[in-house]
Amino acid sequence: MRRDAGRPVPRTIGRSAPLGGTAEVPGDKSISHRALILGALAVGETRISGLLEGDDVRDTARAMAAFGARVERLGAGEWRVTGVGVGGFAEPADVIDCGNSGTGVRLVMGAMATTPITATFTGDASLRSRPMGRVTEPLALFGARAFGREGGRLPMTVVGAAEPVPVRYTLPVASAQVKSAVLLAGLAAPGETVVIEPVPTRDHTERMLAGFGADLAIEESAEGRVIRLAGQPELVGQRIAVPRDPSSAAFPVAAALMIPGSEIVVPGVGINPTRAGFFETLGEMGADIRFGKLREEGGEPVADIHVRHTGALRGIEVPPERAPAMIDEYPILAALAAFAEGPTVMRGIGELRVKETDRIDAMARGLEAVGVPVKEGEDFLVVHGRSPEGVRGGATIASRLDHRIAMSFACLAMAAAEPVTIDDVRPVATSFPGFFELMAGLASGVAGSAEEAG
Image 1: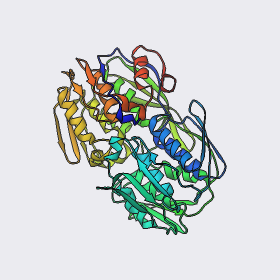
Image 2: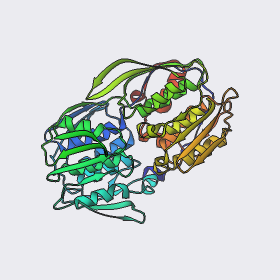
Image 3: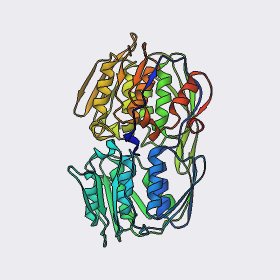
């Protein structure tokens, strides 16, 4: 049975005690997807520790097995992938179901697009509503063909290029998913594939490609950031330690800043500069947030995040050029902004309208329901903070099959005056298994691990 075919699971959340303890959030979702895919494209064995075991990543693991890689779970967060080498994917025997994961489906399409095989992709109701043209169009330049529903939507069949050619592609929008799909496709194409991004996006794919042995060069130019990838390398299996996900860490961090008396630590969080915009924004809003034990793990910068509630934050205008570094955190920022003093202005966020749902609309309607004034446009959202009055709450919120909408309003509910009901919390499992157990543990002052809870 499809995950979106069952009955909704509502959850009512009331005002919380102060949060305390250690929040051990799950592994980074973006890095987990890429570790599985590059492990499948490498020669030999890749060992992954700290892998996120949410639904999205498990769907990518099943996809890699369907393409011929051997994928084994050895223990909690511990996985082994025995790869087939670049260009070695086999044709899947069945449809590839990517669940709710836009990252998973777009990266997998890229990885198979320059191999002469055919694969059909589908997903849940949310994923089937999202356009795939932004990735299939550049993949067509390699020689791949895609046949989907009207508007470039899933289910979609991709026919890989029998004789792929390298491409030079300038990203029309700031999208790490599109950039990564093109780079993955470039692996099996002869010659040099070049990707130009006028606005830098998260660089996990480039870091990991280099770690697996790809011939990769990056330079800054008048056009933007230029990435050059030599095709047909032999990638070699690696040991990868996945840091904890900064997008998942944003939820307990924000909740601690909403709830008076809270003080928590989130250890081992990835603070890659291309992902750290949310924490930079919190600092500008006046948050007491510190980074301890700075270190590098698996080629990624990592730190322990210490956060303490010291009073109401101030509303600010978030620079629009920061959007790529915090695109997934705008829903929780909007929830947090409801408790700030004055308006918080978020511009340049039109990308949120084509996520799991239209996240600008979902947050605006939800915030209005709990008594928070908002203003929205095609690519902006303004939240008028209610401090010192606080947020009323007392409403039912539509999660719209979106994990980040559900978790954002769950955090808001923990600080609102009246309980808030989320109409369906099932989507939370896509990225943050054990979220509710972890937050309950923090509310009781008990150190919590999402992996153990989930």
